[in-house]
Length: 229
Image (cartoon, rainbow, N blue to C red; front, side, top):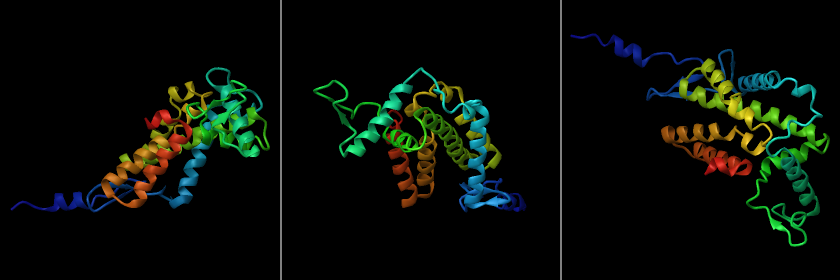
């Protein structure tokens, strides 16, 4: 008669740090990490990615007043921020303007307005100049992309270390740096979130996971519709 001990040990295996083992044998994301669980641990990880953003974009943090670059849509995105702020203050839609193609004007519905980024820049320019605001938003996108990438990587791998490595590779890849000045294309953080919630909904179901998918896709649509398509 064969012993059942190997099966018993397999069914009671301990999950790696950063994961919880469900009854069906799948890893489920556990917030935080060993020694610092929950959202407190997530804030520590987010701070780590923020520090990585400062180090891996040096000397951006000490030259915030300078233009981030001149390629791509840098000036276009500065105009977007100015226009959205101007339109909202004046009380009309930011999706149409007669400041272009005057006097007839033109719809901005298919323009790369990137409303979420434009609103963020508009808020920052209330107390910073446009170049400083853009540089800070770039650093924020680096940090958030790394953190969101780590959430997905931890869910897939069940490992905190693997998640951190995955977040670093995802956010600080050459493709991300190449689009530094195109803040719409640069907005990487919503893609891993959408995939994370999709995988969780496929495996676990639940309205919260479905809402996570919808909100992540909405975030993508509000920054760059290319990624939604």
